[in-house]
Image 1: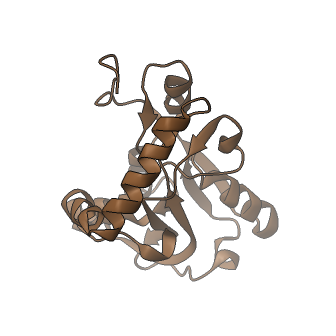
Image 2: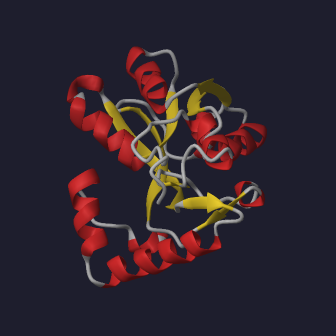
Image 3: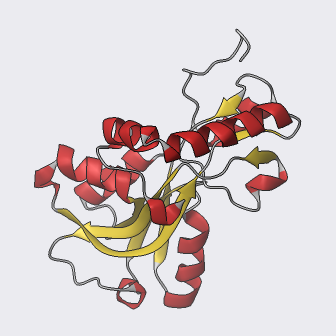
Length: 193
């Protein structure tokens, strides 16, 4: 990596890919879903982890499936890979999508009663539930599994190949699970990768 790499810089969700494309960072490591739309502008590595995406709401709410969300407000992080699924379900079921600028804002809106439910990755939701057990938030149902990949610029073939080889190697030797346990308190999700 070059000495100009901003590997420890934190970029807002909407600025991650532009930071990569402009050369401010050499590659991205985040909860970045390798979607076909994003693959038009960056190269994705093989997935290194993944998570379940679900609908979370207050314990007492009677939500078990998409149909139960008819006329309910459901929060989502604007620009996330979860948003298109929620928009599609809104058209099919009549739920109302409410967009927020961060996962933290979505969770806070649920805690404060501004929305009836939220669509969140389990890693984010579980961290919030653990940090605020009095928040009365529970998983109602999962609706997808999202793999997460690193991303490189389209012209970074050698770096892309090195990252793929490294991911593969640390999956095989168990180091990836060890890192996952340190950072998100659970092993990698093999079903997502």
